[in-house]
Amino acid sequence: MRFGGKAAIVTGGAKGLGRAFARALAAEGCAVLIADIDEVELEKTSDEIVKGGGRCICQKTDVTLKKDVTDMVDRAVREFGTIDILINDAGGSMGVPRAPVDEIIEEDWDKVVALNFKGTFLCTQAVVPYMKKQRRGKIVNLSSITARIGGELTPVQYTSSKGAISTFTRHVAQELGPYGINVNAVAPGIILSGPRLEKMWYERKTEEERKAYLERIPLRRLGEISEVTNAVLFLCSEESNYISGVTLDVNGGLFSI
Image (cartoon, rainbow, N blue to C red; front, side, top):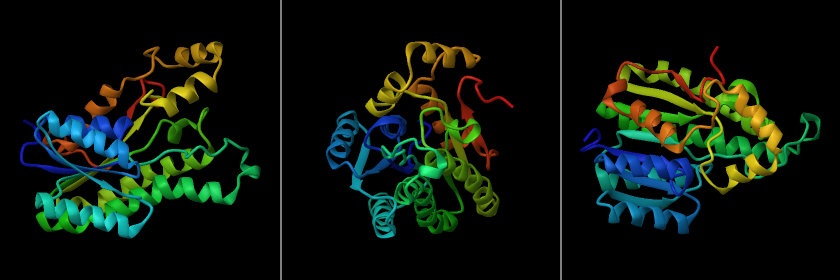
């Protein structure tokens, strides 16, 4: 199995894409710590992985709080003895309104940027000393198609933070490359990975608008969760050992410049 003997942390791992990443890693032999603020879903996902024969533990974690992040990483090291992979999936628009830039409430800006960007920074910062010591590691960050073309469904706080993640990825890849650490990102298009995204897609767009959006995608469809998962696992694997600093677009060709 590709990840036998490896250990990973997946933030935002209770549901949606994070859940899919954790399940796929565990199915290929990886020990996984899933972190999220949703304790109920964390337990459900962890139990499911364990019952399926995988090794998984869960930790309630607010990735915007340094102590929570430190506790999360310390526990992974205690339980697994190593951290080979970090997937920074925790994020979202937190239900803030998609307001014009001159009407945005500062508090809404701060909480979305903190979740998406500060969380990615804190989690990366926390695992790097361990990865440096072992002189290997894979960090995969979640950016978004919105960082490339703006957000038709999401607020500017979200699109800006996802763009920052792509820049952060390039910079940190250059910094950590000499230690054998690969840092990459994945930028999915619209993926209906849970109720929140389904509501945005079906309620914020009319049927005509949805058809027009799909016509803009060269492959003429939305992506599947499995297609994003395959891209993330590739970047976590030894198959991508000479790839670093890349944001891999998984959007059916919508952004292809």
